[in-house]
Length: 436
Ligand code: GLN
Image 1 (cartoon, protein in one colour):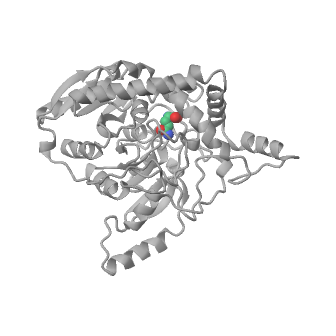
Image 2 (spheres, helix red, strand yellow):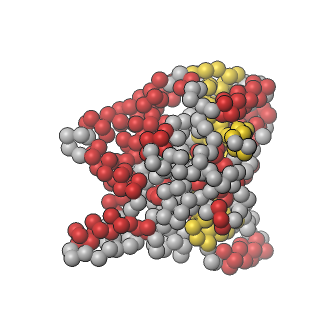
């Protein structure tokens, strides 16, 4: 499986850790994830393993501590077998922007697995591990899940601790699981969700994820988001339609709802994500973390470190983000984007007055060819058209593998996205369970 580029490092201590889990089980401990092998995205710290974030600048960085989400999995008996490939600092939609080389889509190796958590999606789709962790700032769990034919869940902002996740855009970032069934998502979320005093944005609400049954769908009010209905490939359209038919068949009430501010979702997202990234990535100056380039003085060393350490896309975003935050431009860009963010959140709230869940395609198209969008950043950004608004509003959303589209003789997976109001995480996973 190495040739799929899913993993960037293996955990050499996995064998010992599995043996330790076995002893705990033999001693009578009940571990909900006893011995479950798991792959974790390479921007989530696990003590003693490298955390490169897909970047040259952190090529030799070894985590001195473990992220809360990873620690909870370990405490529950999971064994971290490796770290997953990703777009550099989670910036991208194809896992082509990685210092370790691209990850390949197992359904067609000429195509991308999506991103930025492409390695985590491939690990589950190719059966390397049954479950994995990714991070979702604007779609990075849901979009690769859709393109690889697995489940990908982005929890409500604050539901899963971000402590130990290397920050990209802190007000949007959220760790989320990949799995092959709603039941596995349930098991994982029961372990992952919960309050963490080390993350100031962590929510203190109880978590009770249980598998759904057919009754979950009876009378459920499902709103199809009108703005997501154009620009989709025929296979995506057909898959969405088949899913809506299945929902109706199970007793759900399906209607259509308009969220006009969604047409601004992509520019709004990038005008918030890039400024936050430019600020978060300021810490990588060669002084504390990772690689340091030589220089005759500190400024020269920092400049060279960042010039050599960061890839092109990361540099582009730092520059654009700094520009949008600079005096004279702040009001026109960042402040304006914050206002539209509020508008988008308000439109979601209004839609949830009428509907229990909203539905859209996860991506307007199935997996695209490697190299197809690398020279056109705006085309790459547009791949997130259906996912970014959810992060702007802090909502939970789940991509469900729902069908296939045949392209050039290959069957490519297609996903459908369900969105719930804040804290409706449990409802989404139950819904997916009853659709299986
Ligand atoms: N593709 C989007 C971006 O590049 C989303 C990334 C993510 O969710 N981490 O910003």
